[in-house]
Image 1 (tube, rainbow, N blue to C red):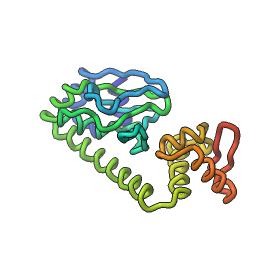
Image 2 (tube, one colour):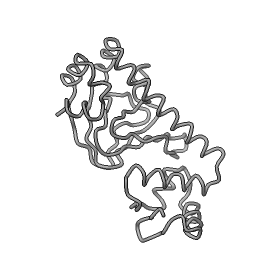
Image 3 (cartoon, rainbow, N blue to C red):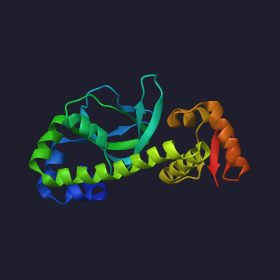
Amino acid sequence: MIAKALDTYFPKLATMPALKEDIIAISNIITLKAGTVILKQGAYVKIIPLLISGLAKVFKEDEGGHEVLVYYIKPGESCVMSITSMTRNETSQVKAIIEEDAEVVVIPADKVMMMAKKYPKWNEFMYDLFNVKFEELLTVIKILTFSNKDIRLLEYLKKEVTLKKNPILHTTHQQIAYELGSSREVISRLLKKLENENSIALKQGSIEVL
């Protein structure tokens, strides 16, 4: 099953038979429920996840306990910041949470270091992933720094419906505020503004992006 997962979602890793065989030998597949914290900020990285289904989110927490969404982890991706922390033998600077029930190929952190030294193809995969996540991070910074709050909120909603392949989001104003580092009152006001502009439709317990 791991072989099929690599072939389907991580073809770059699967093209090198020796690397593929090593990954199969040292990893296993686990199922994680939505809401599971797979990495705590301030903790040492124990495993590197390769997501094959579902969705995960990565957050950064400040000293006051406020969190903001940094990037998503989609099928075919891993958490590049986890790999960076592991490589430096430092505690994680972010927290990762499963957003939708997920299947994950789990690789022990110490084995990842072995593969990095042994296989250039693994490092190539990581560099490509780093570039993708760096672009996402720049987009987040741009939205946070230069965009009006209503534009930032709408971009967030569009991203959510794209990733979840559903125009209707089952969420709360408080949850959105939590992920955007805002307050529920501000988010509620902005959502109402977007509804008046016919960008969204507010329903009980859900938001439809039009």
